[in-house]
Image 1 (cartoon, rainbow, N blue to C red):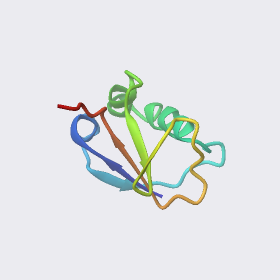
Image 2: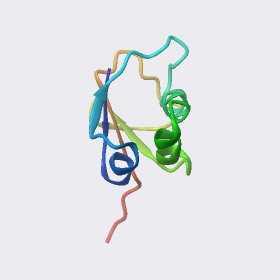
Image 3: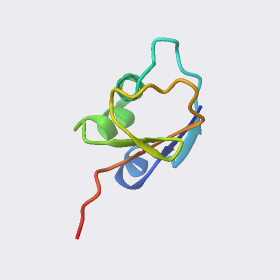
Image 4: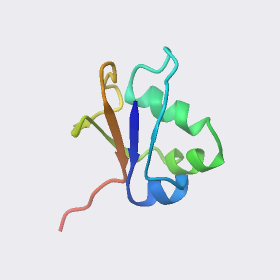
Length: 82
């Protein structure tokens, strides 16, 4: 699965994107962020505050959204309006 990171998440993790093989236990966006945060201190810092947003195949997704069949999941910080 392709993971893409934007803005401050990309800066904290140190990469814009990566391909990963997920364990079967990772089924939702929330599972994925927890799995990523457990990888190392850079991922933990990126997802520590719990405010990262996700998009599954370019559609905004809630933490409980299933990731089965997804080709790409993007993570980005909250957006502000103006």
